[in-house]
Image (tube, rainbow over all chains, first blue to last red; front, side):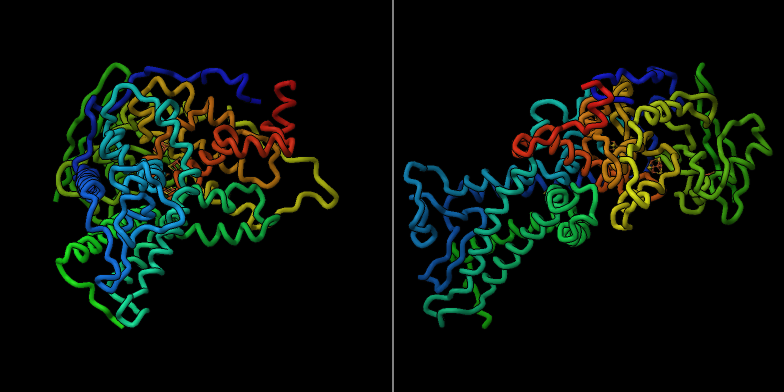
Length: 275
Length: 257
Ligand code: SF4
Ligand code: SF4
Ligand code: FES
Ligand code: FES
């Protein structure tokens, strides 16, 4: 029986003459459209996010405007430099002086970077390995995810746990957004809905994660022995099948949520109260 | 109306595309046209086929650059213009559209077999929910188009020695998900069968004629199992505390420790 110890190079023919012309691809359809869209959207997102993180203002709408809205990029705002009202009081970091938004790099960013779907997206469209199916890899050497740094992709499940903490915090933000100080205390504004949709889409993204599907039950050999975990697995699997769509949706929603809070905070318009 | 077929003709000593023009008939698939070509203009054209129903997996070729079954590709679904038909790129050519796919059988031989425990009283018992994941992988017709499209070996020939490929990853996954199996193939598939070489770009899933979700349902679960077995420090600690072994008893016995 083959085991790790005795596995030898498989006796396959290496370097046999291949059929077909030596062309990178014979495809004539527009296979480059997909990767081009991915590059465009991701570059736009990264550009916007970088700017939004470093401008370090207009991320909070406070009691002066009868709201309690915080941009998802700046939450949790636990640095002493955060604007009043945005930060809590029980945990404040005093030695941090650059933008408080950098904390998002701790959880959500590595979570997305190591996500199985985003990996597919950037391996294809940025690294061109391969750019599309049956289109030649742009690199001569290839070691997949077996070496540093890409071997770190295996830590994805830890970033899943980390990101879940952020999801809890953003959910609290969404709940807090129902506060309309000085306008009846509690109510719903467009900003409330924006933050609720934002938190919900981030939860959907986390719950549709492949690591989540594995940890909740996929890792079992026998489902009939653990009915509860089987039910969970059954619940997450249909979400998981739409992980790609959810990944894009939540990415765009986060950016729009930040943009909305930013526009209101900068005074471009007032956040309308609905009821 | 006529169609132009641009077919690869050649063998180990070299080859070229040759154009053949022949009348189009309604409702035909690519394999029909290839057969008509054999019957009329190119009696020596070599191609493999058996069922003409998308069930035997013999007629794989690259049609307009994409791996497809010739018998399941309708001519009227292809864009206007010449239709290129080339042999699978990843495997050595024998002649014309026929390739030597023995790579896949060599890899299949290496899969450590199903190892059930001795049956209890009343034989083995399983429930449908225990085996339904594996049943998806049983739909495989061994057309080897997933192996063909996989860039790990398509573009990097040297990887063939240690790369099971998507077709065999679904076999490993099926066994690893089997409730009665006692083998543990996680380290083997991680270290020697190239699981880490796959970068989950999903071309195998894209071409599979049986619509098996190879990447989502087999490769990623295998990768997660490899994390359990090798990369996850908490799982490692759990094994230490519960005194579980990374290797199953069967595998330990096979290697003599
Ligand atoms: S997902 Fe992995 S196995 Fe499938 S084609 Fe891509 S690299 Fe190959
Ligand atoms: S998994 Fe799909 S593509 Fe691969 S050999 Fe089986 S049927 Fe063909
Ligand atoms: S978040 Fe995409 S796979 Fe985990
Ligand atoms: S001839 Fe059997 S699959 Fe095409």
